[in-house]
Length: 316
Length: 111
View (cartoon, chains in turn blue, purple):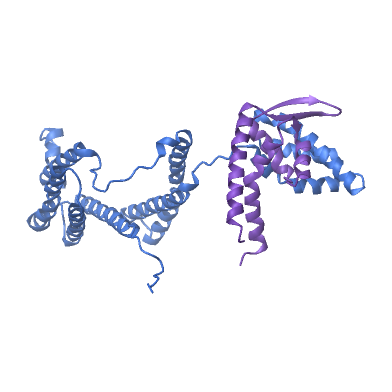
C-alpha cells in the first residue's frame, strides 16, 4: 500500500462511524490534513514518507472509533447519575422474574417420568433467559428520563421532600380509605362477586372455591381482617391532622409488621379456603404479599440515612 | 503516593479544561486545522490533531465558529473563524480564565 492508500483506509474507517450528512465533508477535510501532516513529518525526519511512517502517524492520531467519537457531542443513553440505579434495578428485576419462574414450576404438576430437579433446572434456564426483556424496558425508561432532563433541565430542579406530606394528597387518602373498606367487605364475603356477575347462577364449584375454611373464619380471619381494618382509623387520623407525624409513621410501620406476621401465621396455620386449588392460590398470594412487603420494609430500614461520622474522632 | 500514571491523567484533565479557550483564542482570523495546530504549538499549547480537528467541527455545530472551503495555493482547505457568538463566548471564557488564574496564583503561593 502507498501512503495515500493508508490514509484513505484510515479516513474511511473514521468517516464510516460518523453521521451520514457529515461523512463526506469530514473525510475530505481529514484526508488533506493528514496528508499535510505526513509531509511535515517526512521533512522533519529527513526521509521520504512511506507506509510505515504513515501508519505510525495515524496510530498516534488515534483509533478511528475514538476520533469519530470526538466529532460527536457526547450522548448518554442512561444518565451517568442513574447508572448505579439502572444496574441495581436490572439485577433485582431479573432476579424476581427468575424466582417467579421457579415458583411457577414448583407449583405445576410434574410430567410423567420427569423429576422435580430437572423441571426446576429447566424453569431456571427459561427464567434467566426470559428475564432479559426487563433491562430493555429499563433502558427505555431511564433513557426517556435522561432525554427529558437534557431538554428541560429546569424541570429536574431539586425541591425539598417534606416527610410529613401526604403522598397523593387528601383525595388520595380518601380513596385509600374507601378502597380498604370495599376490599374488606369483599374479603368478608367473596362470593358476592359471583352473585354480582352471574346473578346467583354461577357453578356450585365456583362458590366452593371462594368459601372460607371454618378454622380460618374462627381465628386467623378476624385477626387478619381486623389488622387491615385498623388502617382506616390510621388514615383518618392522618386526614384530620393534615399530615403524617413521626408517631403515625411508626404506627403504620408497626401495623405493616403485625400484618405480615398475621399473614405468615395464616399461611402456616392451615387452609384458608375449603377447595385445594383455591386454598393454594390464596396462600400463594399471601406469601407473595409477605415477601414483597418484607423486602420493602427491609430495604427501607437498610437504606435509611443516619448521619454519623465513619471514623470517630475523640475530642481533646 | 501519586505515581506517574496518575500525574499524566490529572495533567490531561487540566489540559482538557483549557483546550476550547486556547482554540477559540487563535481563531479571531481565518485558519484551517493544521495551521491552527501549528500556531498553538508555537505558543506552547500543543494539542493532538486527533483532538483538535474534531473539536473544530463540534464548536461549529455548537454555533460559535463559521467555516468555508477555500482554495489557496494547494488543495481545498476548510477555514474556521469565530462568529459573533464565538467572540462573545471567547470574551466570557477569557475573563473567567483570568479570574481563576489569579485565584490559583494566590492559592499556590506556598506550593
